Image (cartoon, rainbow, N blue to C red; front, side, top):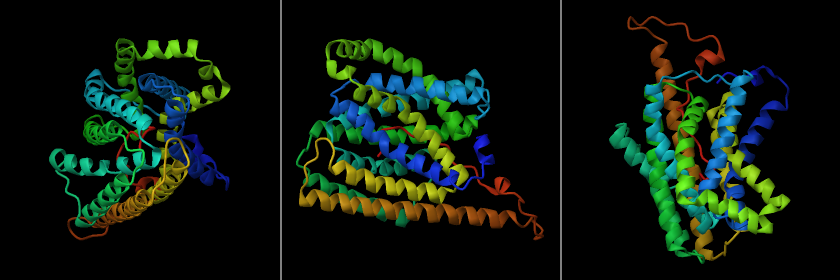
Length: 353
């Protein structure tokens, strides 16, 4: 990603970027929950439509003013991205429906179990095998989530089923994105731009033929609550949430490191669970709180193990490239930009746990 922000050297810039990433990542779930449950705006497809429109316009603006480089791609490349776009739309749609029915702490705990499906699909699609330490962490997360579910006083079977379907779709979306990124060779934000662009007509058709958009318009006309300033603010934040999460995630990794982004993300998980306890529809129980704590600890350990494995892998690759086949040392890159490994492109959504 090409950005002029990297030229700024003010001492407040990096902390501001990290804080922006934390706030946008944390706030995404809450602003959507506020719209869906707090204001009873039960039209998830309309929310997705607004998020996609905002994302495409914002990224196009950044591209026009030179803050973001989005390479042109052929119709064949765009066609390749239609596959992950379908998973993207299905993933976000089901996620918003699930978020409306499940309280935020349980939603977050179950959403973190997406890693199970990702591990399985990466094994069969990308031939990638997870380490034993990662498997143990995931099993601990599963146990914690089960304990929390047994103590959930607001148990909603349909909501739980939707969350698990959401996890499967998220895993499929992530694997499809990784596979597509290998073929079209795009960084994360340009990839998000093209996926959003391809997804937009799909969501327009879905919103129209499902009646979701028409029902949302009628709700605006008949319910004074939806014409309040607070709902307008919540709706604007929801519309911008997907773009802000993707942009600040990539900016945070660019100006700091993957470790800083990882630590900030885990801090977000802790705060999301704690704040969610006091939000819409949550009723506490000892077993539920114990399970949530277990799942959260396992999630933090998992993130640590994955970062250490990633760092070890990159160190080994860098060490291997410092010597040529004849054993002679090769001059390493002289600049930090040259030395930095490209990040695996991902497309984050505003309902991710």
